[in-house]
Image (cartoon, rainbow, N blue to C red):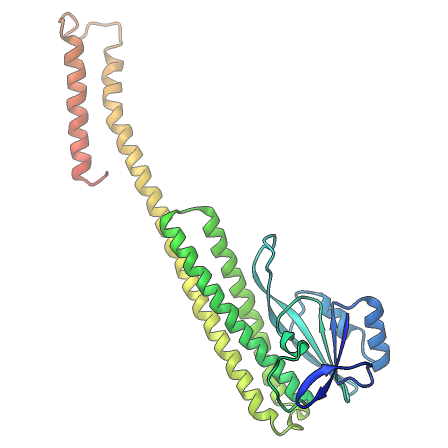
Length: 310
């Protein structure tokens, strides 16, 4: 789908034609829509089709006066069938002579406010719009990181009550999301620092301060990702140690029970042999043998309790 917007009073409003539009947004475009935009603005088709790859790296590329900026942005999958709730996907921003073209093949919330015209008014230029998108990407990274931390805390509380594989798998998925976030944020940081040094960005006097704000927000997101990742990794190690310790306690208990029960079993086995045995002529033989077994077993129980095996 192709969305067209023009600028009016520092806001985006719908436009009727591409010639009138300042911003053209391609949302999961069809091959026909891609061909239409590529032909009209003389773009490299790879600028758009490469973004279909969910693992496309962030990069900055010039081609005959056209600037392609690919950022990694956070994505939230609401469907229960999704393996992980939080991941990242590429967002393409193409700057031509007088147009801004954004391309998204994966649902994300970065452009929602602009598409709905609910963004704060600002001096809209190609440079400021690109940096504004980058800033919102960093803000959403921070937002999703807080949500990951909240969910991790809930999982921790559940694990304290019951050590189940389900909660551990959820924690592994959270750790995987943090790895995706960390990798994407670092690649975005490289792109922003390269962008800061380009002549194209320096054409806008207000862009210099804005790009510094974006880089600061991005660095903050990187720091938060590292902190949450270290916390989650420590929690995983701690719970792995707890599970291993619980297993040792169970094995120690079962071993102690086995030793205690082996004494009556041994005595019963001996008295089951067809040979001459003590007390076999006594009418109290059964009571004596059972009493001896119980006494020895109680002595072993007392020893194991004293050794804190139970």
